[in-house]
Length: 246
Picture 1: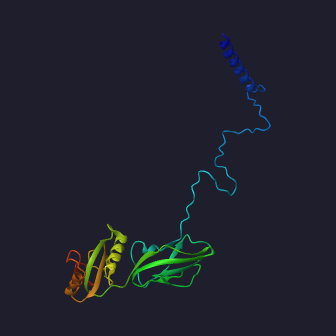
Picture 2: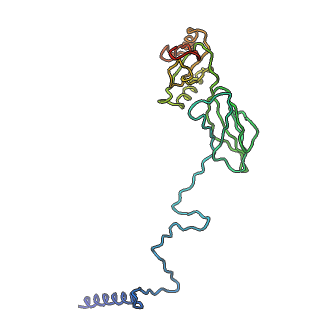
């Protein structure tokens, strides 16, 4: 019996508290008694993204990864450039108040300056590095590989070591094979697109050693390096002025 009375008292007290909190001036607006040391927060406002002026949020913000400066040379991305021509090499992400100097195969091309002057490349494979001098110190970019082709060779026999399909294999594969052959001792290796020669099958990067007077000399070169004829190396007469099928 006493337990039942106690539950009834608690229920009545709860109703009284609810009436007290909802009692207003008759306009239906609840009146809440707040102490002097409390603050009313409107829960409908989203304060999660509020920060001090000029101060980044300290929570739920991923750190910004600063990318190092890189060489920009769009003409050399998808194929060889033309040796003897003038090119402008740029840099992306360089610091303010810096001077730059281009190195080609570890050789400086000019004095440090706010902008890189135009540069001419000799035919062949080159590594480019830009030296950056800033108030914070001296740094260099990662090296970039560039291949420059020379003029068209004269008519003659060549020992063809490889033909890389431009569309299916691409320029990076041609450069990889070039470096591999040079490392094996083919120091006179050349790389040219077959499209420049009407008598050759178009759509390939040809890797070859040229300037042989006869087919026998070209085949002897293949044999000298242990390359199977004709699967790994073959002789081919190429005339830049010959017509297709010639």
